[in-house]
Image 1 (cartoon, helix red, strand yellow):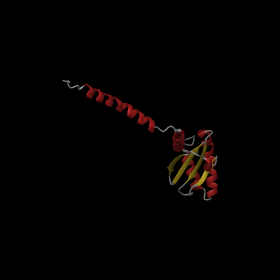
Image 2 (cartoon, one colour; image 1 turned 135 degrees about the vertical axis):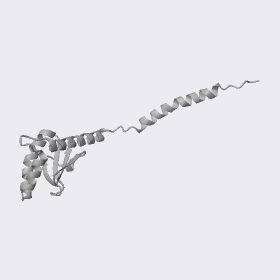
Image 3 (cartoon, helix red, strand yellow; image 1 turned 180 degrees about the vertical axis):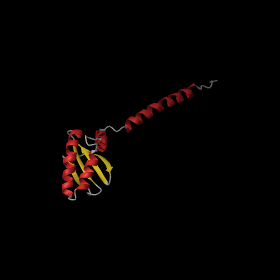
Image 4 (cartoon, one colour; image 1 turned 120 degrees about the horizontal axis):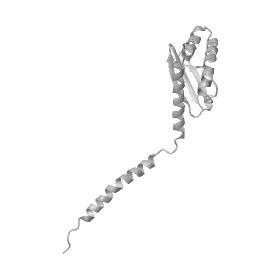
Length: 148
């Protein structure tokens, strides 16, 4: 008479349980996004835009006014929109040139000037990845674009 052998059942269950972590690992690797360059650049540009806009709203020079405060004053004090934008450009251009370096940028006011460009050093239409930051000062809403 053949005795009942239960070792095979435990061996099969042991192998099945051992394969579960291997299957999970294979599925994780298969779902991994290999092309990460665009998302990395988007994140980098976003952070650069946010940091620069934050600096513009907190950095003060010898007159204890922030960059956005000076720009807001220049835009509100000049009745002629073009003169106000030119004055704002003279305020922001040196600061952005020092802060952003070799990256391209565009600053615009989107509330009162309806998206009019204040300062820019490149063509945003040719940019593939763009970081955007929005800051409000007084009645003005500024949008800063940063790209390579």
